[in-house]
Amino acid sequence: MIFRDSHVRGATSRVGGKGELNILYPALTSFRHFDVNAASVDLRSIEFLYLNFPRLGGTISGTATLDSSWLDVRFSNANVLHQDGPGEPSHLTGNGRVTYGEKYMTYDIDAQAQPVSLGMLARSYPKLPLTGILSGPIRARGTTADLELTTTLQGAAGALSFDGRVDIDPPSYGIRGNGQVNGLAINQLLDSTRLRSALRPRRSATTYSSRQAT
Image (tube, rainbow, N blue to C red; front, side, top):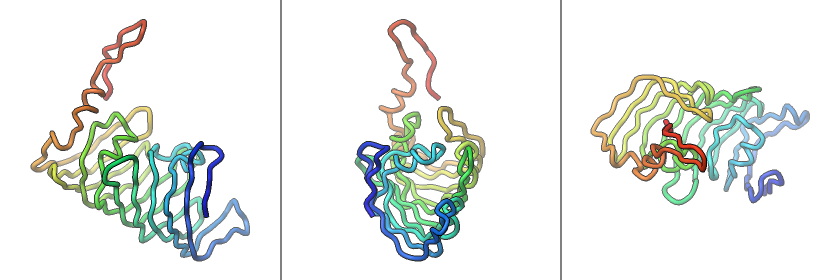
């Protein structure tokens, strides 16, 4: 299937699949061992349908097996790439569950980053002056406004672990928990250009503000 989104200019997705799909009642569409093979899914189409979906840029591709209702979908054997501009994409494998909610979607994901590209994430969240790639397990449960996150990642910039809660629901962000770093090379983890931009005071035509982004 090729889907050209009339609501989002230029958004085109190419997806195939096989398995059991119950569409007797379209609003309650459900999957049963349905194998999805996505050549490319434009994330803008998903974000148009689900306003509380994480505001990631770019596209995703890969495979996964879907079960249960599309409002409470469970996926297994996921092997997904996220690409947003040039550079090495993020590559995640694992299992999980995504449940629809009126205000927020709820996630229960157990994945392996092979790796996660911090530069790709920084393009979606400009206030995060990060770069480089890290690999390791990621456990995430909750919503974008209150996400329980446990991870241990390592790469050329060193190793870090975190166990706590994060808020990645725009426009503000928060983090609370415990972490540990080992042999961390800050100069390889932080993008100096983005860091200067995030800390630079903003000036308007009529007023000046020394308020800095956090």
